[in-house]
Length: 334
Image 1 (tube, rainbow, N blue to C red):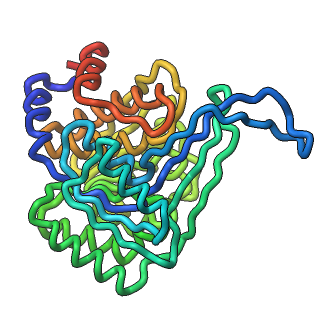
Image 2 (cartoon, rainbow, N blue to C red; image 1 turned 120 degrees about the horizontal axis):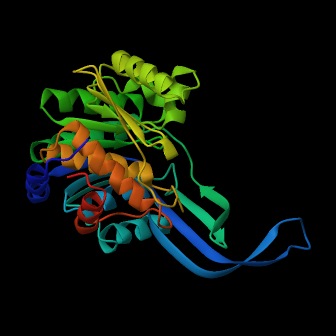
């Protein structure tokens, strides 16, 4: 499996002309990093002495960061609370190098801005604290998002649905976005949520991991044969063009439903340090390079390479064009 060098170079030049609507659950990721030197006298738990604290965009925000890192423009659709964390989130959208060209944020009094706090000691996550409220969009909010999407439609070439099941992507909104996108020839990629799995019918590609795919099918899928059978069944039931199942240390498997062809792509990570956000990198890179002219398989090879780089870093990380190209070349994929 190779990537055509000349087409890849052309795709790099085209990325700046690609604009993708990122629609989904935006999250603030907080990291408290420190040391553990003793056990608490109050309970048998470690006491973490925090040395460093940071905030970054997670959820669909990490997709935006990944796209911006390779030069792709974005229109961002999400929901935040009426709170101070919403202000922080807006600031990070424009200071972390994500800078969406258009921003459609619903402000809700029904939910807080979602924030996930990870406590890390000795390069190991000790625990995670989630502050969130899962409430589906109200009818008025749904109508607002649909109207905003119609307004953005003429300027976008692709859509990424980043579903973390926080209530923003309701079945009604999912189906409407896919329907309208298909009517306008816009490619839709979905990072799915198991509870919504069979509402994504008609999308261009789904990128579940093997656990999510197995839960959707109420089956344990792990081996190549199980993965292939599962991917084929899901693609058939959802009428989707491609099914990309990520498989951790076993890499990923792409099923081309139109050609009835499977491709198994081995992992490229040299050392897995933190898998946070790897799925965001996969869907971002696949969608961007596919829209920029690479074939589905070539886009998977690029996405797999990028994911291998981000899992070697702490937190929701991104890759830039230069390091992506260097790694692809080092792996002999041209």
